[in-house]
Image (cartoon, rainbow, N blue to C red; front, side, top):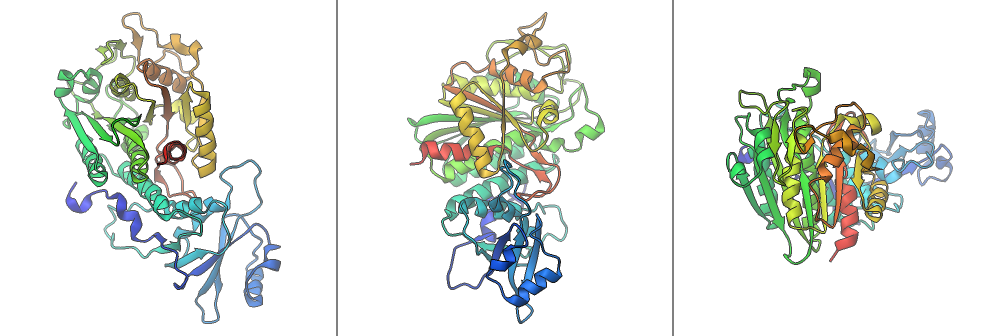
Length: 478
């Protein structure tokens, strides 16, 4: 990754969110639920007639630009459609994210009051994201700019936007340009910006430092595996540790994936990207915590020294693991990293991983499951996810499935013999390596948006990062 190709999280400040300025000329945006809106709308009779001629009925996800007397855009109406009761994603603040990709370049403002002004600002920034690194016409793109809505913390909104853009850039970058070394470089760039420290253990040094499963998963690649370790914050503050799966490409190993399943395996480091995104939000907000981010980074490749089905690996925690499937490698690297994290007895330990297809079968690509034994923490996370439009759904550490991991030759297998409860079984596997943390939560994210939505285009997505930041900022704001 050359200097010109660095993933710089400050890029979001270029264009998307302006300082509110009463003197600056900006185009107003109104929201409409139905056609009755026109009877009370602060627009001219000619503009109302124009909307009527266009068949405007306040339809959901439709917008209309209102012409001025000189032919310029005098305003914008965004139809919201009929309210869907109980749907946390059906909110005007989130619908704002539709507009940056639809409107002509210009400076805009929200003419209507927003109950959650910061969320509207964030939605605008997330909707403005585009990944253009490999476009040959990748010059500076004309941008739509939004005046920071009244009541929004612009600096905080920008840090959230920047964090998500950073994670999306990392996930969207193909594996030929983002291996374990480049992922480490991204972590170091972020650390440099915030005054954090980064250390890494690379290649065969993983064996010397007792990370045998990270080494086993990554040893078949020509790009050395590593454990990336970022620390920031006051040493005696509450310890929060994030562990993100950094499999930069997953062939499945000797249990090779079919080609169709490999097409978006560049996203298999989505857990690492999510941890870095959440870390950026935490550090930007200067939360009073001692933050640690651990990223076991590797490429699950195939060569003569690849680990095999039936192998028995010793973990950092001393427990032995029989390999039932080499395509269940993420939980192996996470287990070593979680064991390290647990040794420090953090108050909160969280893992993020694109871990199982079973999670997608259960809840689809937009609603990642999470696991924790802490009921109060779970309630905070679920509520925050709905509040900020980053929903998650709690699933159980179901003790009845513990026996699914039994092995006749080792302390455990890395997979179950049966096809059921794959996400739960994987979460149970990880929990076996956490014994001393105050609370543990695991997020089985997808890390990808399969189709464009108001909060972003198709591509990488750090699911749960914004929800968790909302929780942590309320717990640890200075």
